[in-house]
Structures are given as structure tokens and as C-alpha cells.
Image (cartoon, rainbow, N blue to C red; front, top):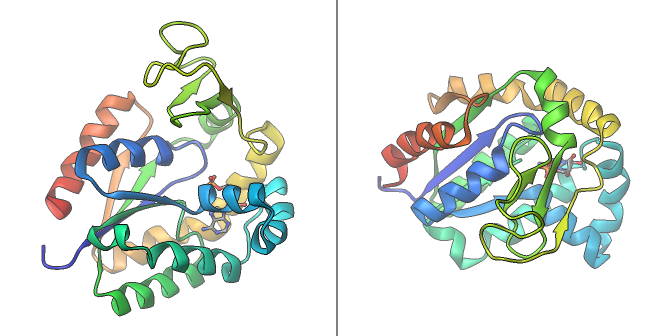
Length: 222
Ligand code: AMP
């Protein structure tokens, strides 16, 4: 691998992009870069971009390419990204994918793989509606599928505060699934055309999915 690897995780809300990106970050030392996290931080900080993004996020729609690209470029300009990143939730439109190609070219980086996490839509609403995270370390949990071993205590860091995303409710999830199919799913073909697409069955057990992903990432980011 001559160029630092950029990994792209594609998949609808609830496919496990965030969970898997965090695991890959730990295993391979890549930086997880989630535009959703960056936008939520901008909303919480009340920045101009955050204020402009909030309405679209609350409704489950997409934030404008202009805002998202500005936020992504700022983050990609930080030195820790230079040895490789995992993009989680970006790109989400054809315009973002084209802008990413340009940005990577300018930074001397290349796409190691675009990994499509393949799931059933029907299961996604249940997955997303029940999920929550540790407020301190971000470890993910779920009301039905993954509770902490000791109730109310994070397995990973021992914290006792948890949080749920405001947009993780059944109504907003349907809107998010719709925008995924309309705007983002076509990118699967785009990356297939570039010869970097990998597909992973993301319906099973988290550990097996992580192993499948690690095998792919190991080939391009070892
Ligand atoms: P996520 O955490 O990836 O599910 O993103 C949460 C919300 O942030 C989405 O429903 C969108 O409103 C917005 N968002 C995140 N990433 C993008 C993106 N690349 N393009 C447009 N909107 C985005």
C-alpha cells in the first residue's frame, strides 16, 4: 500500500457502521470519521453550520453537501487523518462522492475499499429505535440485542450515564431509510465501477461481521 488507506462504510441507518468503524479504529489504528458525529457536535456547540444543519437532521433528511463538505474538509486537514481514515456516513450523495475523489487526490490519498454493509430494511427500524450509547466512551448498546453485563454500567469504561440520539425514533428512521435509498444506495454502483467495492452481510452476529470487515481492511490497511 503506497497511499494511506481511506475506507468507506456504506449502509443504511442501523447497519452497524458506527459500531464497526470503532472496532476497526481500535484494531488498525485508523481514525474513525463520522460526519453524523461531527454534525451533532456542531449542533451541540451552536455553530453556524450546526444551526443550519439541525432542521434536516431532526427530520431525518440530508444536510446540504456544502455544509457537510466544509465540515469534512476541516477534519481531514488535521494531521491524525494522514495515515488513514474510516469514513462512516460519508459520502451520502453523488456530489459528495465526487468531492471526496478530488479531496483525496489533492491529499495524495486513495480509497482502499468502499464496504457496503448489506441488511434488511425491515430490521433496521427495530435496531435503530432500541439503540443507545455510553455517554462517556461511546460504546453502543441495544434494548433487545445488547444490554450491559451489569445493568446501568458500561462494560467498557464503567460509566453509568447513557444517551440516545434524538433522531433514533421510528418516524425519523423511515425518512432516513428513504434518503438512503434515494441518494446513497446508488454510490454502491459508483464504487463498484471504480473496482473498490466490497459487500459484507451485516445481518448476523457483530463479531462475525467484524471478522469479515477486518479481513477486507487487513488487505488494504495492514
Ligand atoms: P448518522 O450519524 O450518520 O446517522 O447521521 C445523522 C444525520 O446527520 C443524518 O440523518 C443526516 O441528517 C446528517 N448527516 C450525516 N452525514 C451526512 C452526510 N454525509 N450528508 C448529509 N447529511 C448527513
